[in-house]
Every structure is written in structure tokens, then in C-alpha cells.
Image (cartoon, rainbow, N blue to C red):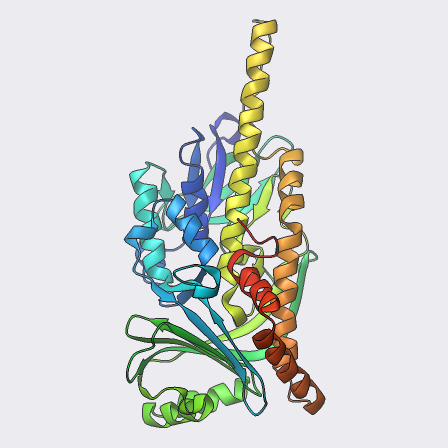
Length: 410
């Protein structure tokens, strides 16, 4: 193993070269920082991710600022129709009410990763593909990462700060809160006769939400059910499963085909604190949310933007302090910008607490309230949906909450 004491120290190690880690690298690309990314997966595996992402309007603004939006094929969501099966009440949220071209967009996670990776490569930021960060050992001055790669001897890498953007949430960790929803999500591409007309549907059923998100000429489906129901639905042929879906959505549209179905178990996991000694966790390494309302990646991107802003402010302050010190005492020694300093991470944590915890509670409450067939609660849900439809200020609050987070970012 390499002599750690003699190693160069990077400013920032980003663990994970998926969309979250790549976005952080891009947000800092012009800061003059020494940044390196490491990902256990081959590059192709990241760019072939079959999942779809619901991107809020706020996320579009961030991706435009990062310079990758124009390279992304994204389908706009102009209207969102929300209803519950077997109960009264529905609401319609319209982009025109907010003077926006779209409330959000749907894009392939793999395509987004490919666009971000191309921009990171163009910026000359190194990515260590097929390199697992097997361990992080934070200390007072830096964090030492143990690296493992196929066909290569073990190695180490030093950095002032490690930003973990993939994995790392394990059941039983003392800092991790977990709740198993006892639900699975079936995802697939669904064709619809007559097109989707830019309308997304969120239909709350007795087992969980059923979301149809416009993508291309059809829909990206997220169908949440109990695990035993998922077994039964995966056993159906396409024609029978399509008939099952049609019964859920009713006459609002005519579904005409369904692609390959994939399955994911759903649970809530989150770190009580997203920062530690010279370490910060982002995206799925910080929290794994239920897909209801499509908030997971949007929250991660807000975290990325806030972290980059905090780090850049710290670097600016360090540069001004160094300049002042050198002007008053030319022989004075100055320290480089230390991204992992406790005060820096504490400032980031304070800035993100309300939005992060608010979004976690928002999605968790939606699941618990709308996945319950208790009759009085079903009537209360109908009244709530009716209230959203009747009172524009309330509908505006919910729409902005979904687009920009708890602080109506940006």
C-alpha cells in the first residue's frame, strides 16, 4: 500500500460518479479546486441506468446553470392530475397558473448521467471508474480513502473533504433512521392512445400511489403495491397487466401497451445528520425517499447546489483573509482553503436542515396518509384534494413546494 504520509492531498474526493456526484463536480469546476471522483461501477453501467427521474422546475434551473440541460432529452409536465381511487376529490395543478412552460420534466437517469459525465470530462476533472472506496478514515486534517480496483493493488487517497454521493446507508447504523413501507414499486414504459398531452397523473390507490409521468410519446409508470401483489402482477402477461392498470386509471386515457417491468422495494432511510468529520453525504447516501411526488433527486440536487455554494463562499473568505494577511505581514504563512473544516460543514448543515427534513416528512406523510383505506381518512383525503382544487393559494403553495423545496428555492 502507498505511503500515506507522502501522498498529495486533494481538496475534494467525491465518492460516486452518478448524477449527484457529477453535478457537484460541475458546480465546483471553475473554483480552481483539486477534485477527484471515484465510482465502483464501470462508466457504462452508470450511463445505462434504466430508471426515469422526475425533474422539478428548480432542478431544470440548476441543470441549465451547470450547462447540461440542452444536451438532455426531457419531456415537459404541463399539468398534474391528482386523485384517489374509490373516493371523492381531485385537483389539477397547471403550469400556466405559475407562468411557467412546465411544472417539471421527465428524463432518463442514464441519459442525465451521460450528459453530466461528458461535461465533467470536458472540464478535465478526473474520474476513477471501477474503483471502490472501501473505507474512509477521517482525521483532524484530512480523510484517507482506501481504494480497491480490479487488477490493481490496494491504494490510498487523501482529501480535505469526502463527499459521499452513492451508497453508504446501512440498516442498523446509529445515525440512520429507517422505516419499511412494505411496498414495492413496479416501473415500466407505457404507451397511450392519443398521446399524453403533457399531463402527469398521480392516482392514490388502496395499496399505494400509481404515477404516470409523460415521457416521449408515452408514460413512465411507477406503480406502488404490496410485495405479494407485486409477485402476482409480475406473473401476469402484458395484456393482463395492462388491463389491471386500465381499471385503476379509469376512462381518463386509453393505455395501449406496456414494456418490460422492473421491481424495487421501497423504504425510508435517512441520516439524522448529513455531515460528519470531514465527510458529507448527498443523494441516496444521505436519504432514500419514497417515490411519491418525485422528490428524491430534486432534494439531492438542492443539497448539491447548497454545498457548492457553501464551499465556494468559504474559499472566497479564505482568499480574502490570505490577501489581508500577506499585505500586513508579507512573511506570514497562510493555510489553503480547507473544505472539510468543521465550521464549513456546520454552515452547510444549518442551511439545509429545514428543506431536507421538511421534504423527508412531506413525502413520508403523503405515503402514510394516502396508503390507508380507513374510511374517515379516505373522506378527509377527498376533502383535502377538494380544498386544493378550490383554493388557488393552497394549490400554489403545494406546487411551489414540489418545484423548489421547503424554502421555495431558488
